[in-house]
Length: 415
Image (cartoon, rainbow, N blue to C red; front, top):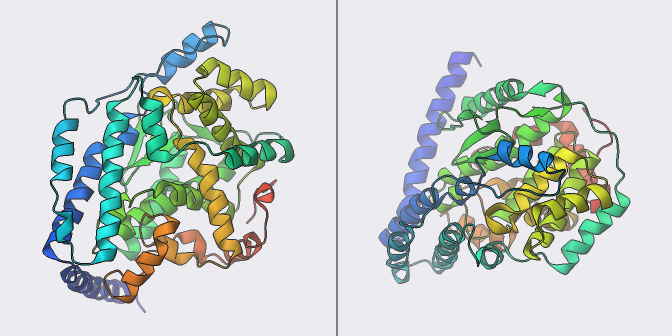
């Protein structure tokens, strides 16, 4: 087929897909449509991750080093939700949830309504007494078995020499643009802005469907594609797929979606060919740091533990400690290892991989979503991550189905 013919075919297919989406949307009651749209809008308005991203990393690091690594200043943030919280809450709980006719959708949207309320509280309590409780209420505590798993990884996964960080933010941005163009070639509605942030030290993250890179970010070339698959191939592809669903909250995420999302994103690094040992150790360190933050250890104490007891390098220990102390003590970072552990258990039981990309949700909701697929309300994923189409990645996926978590790393890049 010629390029013009392929473009015409894809345009026709997209038209049919849009018509199908309209028909599926019509299967939702008017109340469900209104509530779904409202929750999706409110999810974007709250944007808790951006509101808990420090804007003074340089200052923190400079003063921390100047103190001889004994004092870590507090993080500073952008705009909060103090004035908007009451209005958002009033609007949130005025939604006519009882008018939703499909009990599966009603249950999913009630869960989301409650989660948004907890997100509002998390941002409202930023740097105040009670923030840790708000974090535990939203993301859960650091469970004892997860903490034991983290220590097991630190004891058994080797400390290997770190790769040289020989690529800067511009190289990562170019790779991200190519990845975005790949997905847009299959669906012109796929959109991902690549943003180089002026704030230093914030690394890589996605927010509202866009990919952010700190201007001072550096990484080894072998890690670029795995990290692109983590951020764009997982977080942004599932957001796009959720936007293609009649239930639009699958784009921003159903309640408790973070656990599966982060598990999928880290697994993407392994399947893409390079999840180094130090990456797995970092996930374990985040669990330990989150636990210490909940126990109200200071940032400098967390840093000292990671460097002295677990031989973590200074820069990574600093980043991990700052992340753990966001807002006053954030447990969200424990979800990466938890999500990876739960996903591995799912795959050990022959769970299907591709269905996990139909949007952002938790594994506990999969059964309900499968029923909605059977009812014709939902549709299979519009896009599949690029790496999953790779033969070598499929072989790695087969390997993963019998691999213990402590062995889920690669000593060198795989093709």
